[in-house]
Image 1 (cartoon, rainbow, N blue to C red):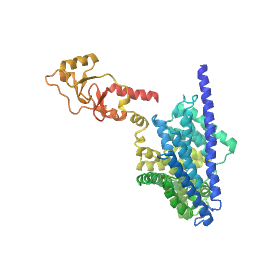
Image 2: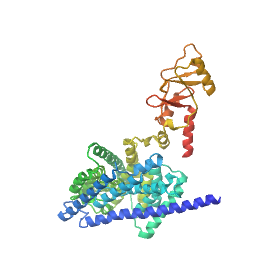
Image 3: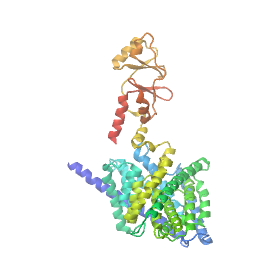
Image 4: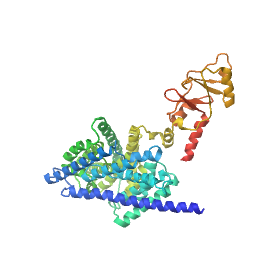
Length: 554
């Protein structure tokens, strides 16, 4: 009892410290990007579009070229093959064979920070999620922390990062469980809550707090406005799908171009400079622009321009080496879309424009939720960021419509699309996906009887009796499987083996093996290499025990 209490107290202290550290780091990560934006683009007016003038254009070009040069050198000397983000964190939380790599995490974080500081149209939340998971991987190596469940370390670090970045401790918990861990088990709730609360309290105490989304506390809404909300949801789902596909296709095109990773940033800065000098709202995090949209201070033409420019430039930037997150751009795109649709319909029906900011918030949820695969987290984040229950309720309806629309087009969020491209299909469900990570050759298996091809029938029967089995396997001199025999065959004058006998390869996954064995009738199923070398045999009981053992570990 005393030891259990001591472990409990130690873990509370550890998760509290993790939350505080991640919270402070997340705050400074974002503040550095905002400070750099103010320094480089101090003379830019974000309420208009058009050429910003040569002095500002030169500063933007120098900043982006310097970032491209630094990233190029960093990539070349670190020899990193690709940049890492939330998809890698999701995989690490599910697959023990794919932990977050500390070196890759640090390099990816440095690249993302450099891109943001220079004004690349990318986000900070994805890099924050991955950096927090990188910290969890580092802490895992420490003696006093390494005994803690790795998923708890990842989940608590991620919840702390989101709590600090959005000022949303509850949203941090839900985001971590829904998007990253993909598990709402109560055993994760307490550690995540401790880290998230510690992060929120620490950042509030040190740096203060303010609502990220400011909107009127009360408003009147009628059926026409609800129709607009539904339209925003439908369009939001379509835009989220298009945005996700653009991110995937541009990355695929960049990888297939043959241009080395360390040269790509120099290509990326060209369209960013060209468009950014005329539509500066799309550069960087876009905090000022989002505030202007929510304050209903941008004209319709500007909303169209920033919407189109952001949805095009973000995939180009990320795929060509000016790496960063997709969450913040999705937020920007959603806010622009919602305000754009709201402005068009309120103008067409001669309605007041006081609810355009509400439609902007609905657009935010409609694009973000399906992109990250977190509808519940998105609604909670909107609630905590706005402190407006009525607006969050309306946004929830929009999120539901958006998710339904998106799911008609794809079963995978953007992060799931990334993993699918690497051979990991999360659309099969978490339990099935986890079973697909286990190879048949790795599971415990029962004893079997295998004999050389020149063994006579009497000896085969004798060996099968000694092993207590009714089936055996005949091998050639190179240990290759020739055929499977059973006592019924052997007791007949001419024993035979059916040509369609089921055989597992050692690298086949457990999920596939269970599906193949669903119609199997017999005692055991042989396992071979792809070259036909006999490894052993499994019974249906072995397969079911492997599933049960995995479920018990979870």
